[in-house]
Length: 315
Image (cartoon, rainbow, N blue to C red):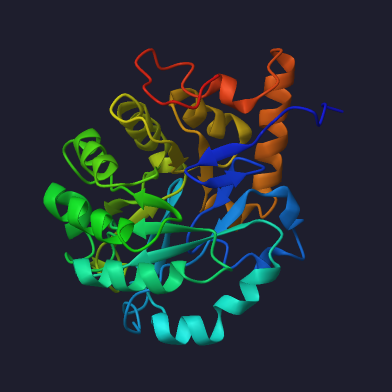
């Protein structure tokens, strides 16, 4: 049995996670859906599904398509809108024995400010993820993450309405993710989620037609892990704020790649669909890795493989 004395905590701005494992937005519900399978005290926290200013029906079906080593999704930000969300959903998050991170999406700078302010005002919400990089809502969903000026404006607007931890989710679908990261950091982000899904599509050769109702979608799962690790590596050389590494994490060794590249914590998404206990295995495996090498704190290995790591969390 590996010693439980090893400190696996992670700090993202004001948000302190007892374990470095967040569950990705849209992939874990509100935690309640997994509670019969997983002890929620054994995960760091849950990132809730993104909410927008107005209700959205989402994209036409099919919305999910399995592909080799991954999953294409084009949900289209389906949600009831912030008014209904606050009235019917948020109160039940108060009993979660882990961190709860609200996720905000928008289609204008004002949207990001408005929804962030209202969601962050609730005590049930510990931090905010700013989703400026949803690649499955036609072209409008990618605009903010791919344009430095819009990324800066959305981040600054959200920063101006809350002092809770602000985690900005970046897109890999850009030429230089590090440059976007620097702009967002300067605008007030407390942490960066690296990365969101990669744009992709799949064609049904029998029908000679796209398999997704939206034609294109976001690719997640093991297929994008090398892309995500490189993005974390590059961003960790460009900014000093903590990084939440995500993209294809299924095992402890997957998570360790991100941490050694410069991630302070990790987020598990698609991996939960095939193994709901993945976050438990990831945390246990990280703890064993540290113990075998004589470390007592996770922070000691953050960015250890990256000689130009600039973050301020490594011991």
